[in-house]
Length: 88
Figure 1 (cartoon, rainbow, N blue to C red):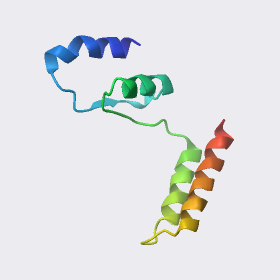
Figure 2: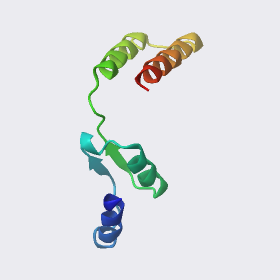
Figure 3: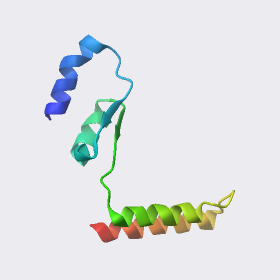
Figure 4: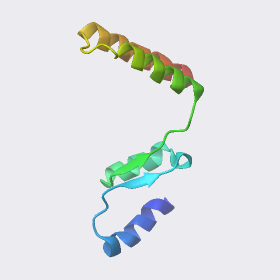
């Protein structure tokens, strides 16, 4: 990756990297894997998908209660799994 190479070049000049911020276009599993492996702190915005928006709205509705039960957590897990497995 060009990004990893560039980071290796500038790291000695700028010192500690507290956070690397990426735009949505950089959302990529391979990049996230490499950044994690090299222990770079990063934040990458996620591409906007309508089904993700609906998922987060449903999650927000389910978590409005002050405490979640084990059953609530299981429902949340199933909901997330269903939504993401539909995408693939």
